[in-house]
Length: 355
Ligand code: TA6
Image (cartoon, rainbow, N blue to C red):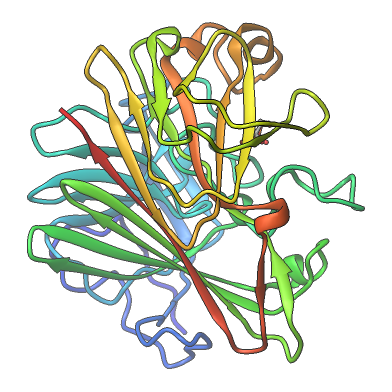
């Protein structure tokens, strides 16, 4: 194939700097990836080096859908990582192909809902600190594999951007991750397909579908590790988990009986609520309230690192802990998912900002 000089895809161009190729290996009908090489300008729109442009040599142009609606553009974000920008009628968003990580969502007329650390790394081999990291196929440390990356390989891997559609006032994007030589060499070596659908509008809907491509059953854990922006976490309550027992990750996973009150934050908090399908609402008296409804998710994780843990993390600003809370839609530990050969499972979270 004759190399072409790739360039960031302009919205509505109809063609993503490449004619589709026929080598589609995935089950998804729109997955026609094409790889190109060559230097191209990278402008960092956000983060510490906002506005500076430099020429970077990308090993390959990320695969993008053959056509993009006018509301969708693919470009380079922080660290020169490929990013999909959505400017829809009812909401805007940014999604990095690295981990298929949504890093920003703002409903039309509203405030940014997701939190992103100003000190986050944007590197091909590091997790982005903020937005919605996808934890898969394990959560936290991998039992029996101490050197395995925390929260699995999905957030550390580049996903394919396979489809973008406008559906009424919403914009629906699909990302795909299949097993690779690297994942097959990991602590979870199975053949699989992950499809992640992100719907951007007045609500943000996230659906993670995992298909087992092995001839035998597999089990896995998963979490949409959502970082929400709040004014001050010390004034925030999380409602919806009343009565649900939790495992305290700060006390050796001791089981703590359910409480009758919403969760309040007075210190580092790291809780795994198991066996709960309930929606959670982050009530922020400053007006950042958000509800997270979920389907096919039986665990909810609530996390705030507080001061000392925040200081111990190099990709987390020392004072940033007051402005965020994680409420994670998950299936972990006793709620892990088992799939028979060829079977699929879809976990969904729907975020809605509450006035
Ligand atoms: O979801 C809560 C948690 O498991 C905490 O224990 C904390 O470690 C957090 O995730 C962040 O993990 P990370 O690997 O992104 O630093």
